Length: 186
Image (cartoon, rainbow, N blue to C red; front, side):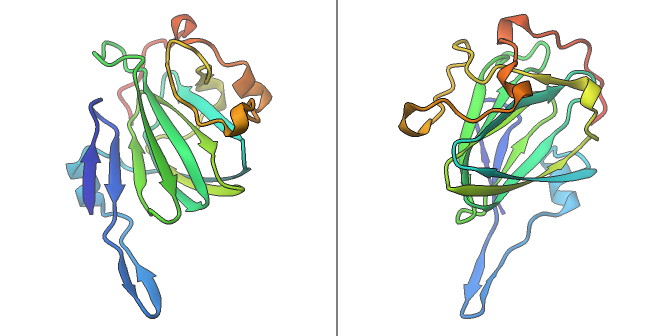
């Protein structure tokens, strides 16, 4: 597996080695020992979402029990974003962006302490992500996807406003976040 790091420490893009032949393809999704070597914590919860074109989910984070997420696309394509919200980080408020697709088979590691969100580029996208902590609804926060302070270049189709949940539409700007004290549990 090939590992790509970014200017912001923590997030990584994982590219599996794909074996193709006349039957189809095979690739390894990961090994616990290798994940540990790369700083990816134990993955304890699996989630999958399906979304239509123009949907934006996020930017979500957990205040006290931050989740690391290993994200991959099973069908379609997304523009995926991770925003650094780690207290004391020199890159606090900065983001990493990638495009993930079923064709690339890449996985995006979003470490604990980052807000995460994605925008659907294809007619439909099935997104699978594995988490290092359990989802706790009362602990969740939403960072405003369109906050100018983030300078995220969302590739909105036709310049249209994305389709958002009511919760995501009520996200808070970076300057107004109340992150509390994060647990060290991942």
